Amino acid sequence: MKPIDQPPDLQRYYQDRTVVEAYMQRRTGQPLNGVLHRSQVRFLNRVLDQRAPRAVLEIACGPGRLTAEMRGVPLGVAIDASPAMLDTARQRLNGSAGQWSFLRTDAFRLPFRSASFEAVYTLRFVRHFQLEQRRALYVEIRRVLAPNGVFMLDALNRDVSLPYRVKRGIEHYEIYDVLYGLEEIEAELRQAGFRVLQCEGLIKHYWAQRRLNRLRRIHLNRLATALIQSLEYVPSSQPSTWMLMCERDSEAGSRNGRHDISTPESS
Image (cartoon, rainbow, N blue to C red; front, side, top):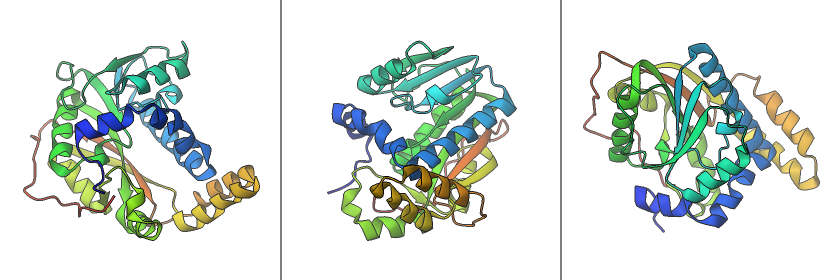
């Protein structure tokens, strides 16, 4: 079965109530995913604290996994195409959203004026599309960013992710994910008119940490979490995930390359 990689199909997938209901458990329930989630939250909050943006846009907020964890956002807009996801996000925040508002809209046609936001972030979204769609998203993101505004996203390391996917069985992955080498994602962002300023590797020792994750099966979740987290302090050149912080390059146009520099993978 061909993995989902087209915007209409992805929208339908995330409007499924069973997908929505299982989302938070899948992303934060297990020790390994919980460590990743908290690391992503720390990265985003650190950048927001450093840059102090007046207006922040979260694209594909889902059930508010990240939205609810963001701190010190004066004005935030969280968007998603799925009404079910947005309903869940509103319920999760339950009046604690502060200055956040939620909007159902299409990320490929953002209904905002140019230069409306000083910061934009999106995780587990851009990577679900083929290069042509990714470029279209970059154009819209760059348009709504103020000059020198900051853009944050995640990327999967092909050298770590692909062997695991092959071992598990490619057919288990319903949603397409582009997999990268670090130089490839940085080049793709430069071509789209962004300067990569920060890159942080997360889940630095994936194979060992995945084995530790199995401790949950004998109800040792706290121990598994502590051991997985401890390995994040050990340096590694091959993390499973990168978090990238980019700045809108005011002097660069949106430069699209002629070829997909990221080798397509089987999702």
